[in-house]
Amino acid sequence: MKHNLNLDIAEAGWLQALTSAETISAEVFTHVLDYISAHETIDFLQTGKPVSVNLCLSNDSEVHILNRNFRGKDKPTNVLSFANIDDDNFDEDCQLNDCIELGDIIIALETMQREAAEQNISLHDHYCHLLTHGLLHLSGYDHMEEDEAQEMESLETAILKQMNIANPYED
Image (tube, rainbow, N blue to C red; front, side, top):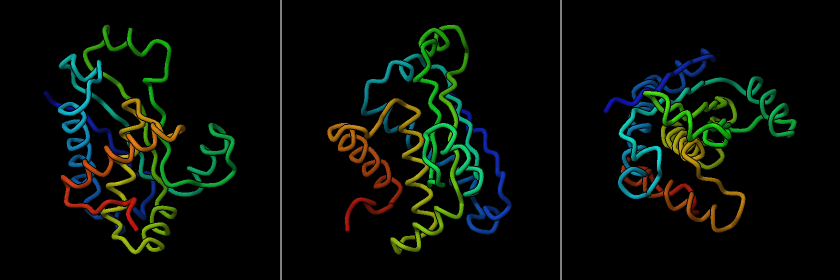
């Protein structure tokens, strides 16, 4: 089954910051889907249909606008996810369509770079974490409640470990 990651590099700075962004993104996408398919029971992954995600690599300015307009937070953030699973007609769409459209992820370059520097981790590792985080949101995971946060962090840690990336939640 071929999954589809639609990548849009909207900020030219990404081309220098993460030269192999396309390859890395595809690898993370595959790791996340394979892991949750093998370890979790998620109805839409049991259909055998390919999954599609739109990923935009952008900048603080664009993410700031989206964060203000959609989340009421007047500042940039590292990653935003717009999950189709939250739509009332998601289940029906899954049944009717040949491909499951999970939604959209946008990552802000400057915020990601700043956070990686502050945490003393590589841009590659932080990017993989942010994309994994966004993909889990699109798959129905959240971190609003403590038990949800623990489950999501546990999944992120396990998936990143498979990619030889250290636990981002350890000091």
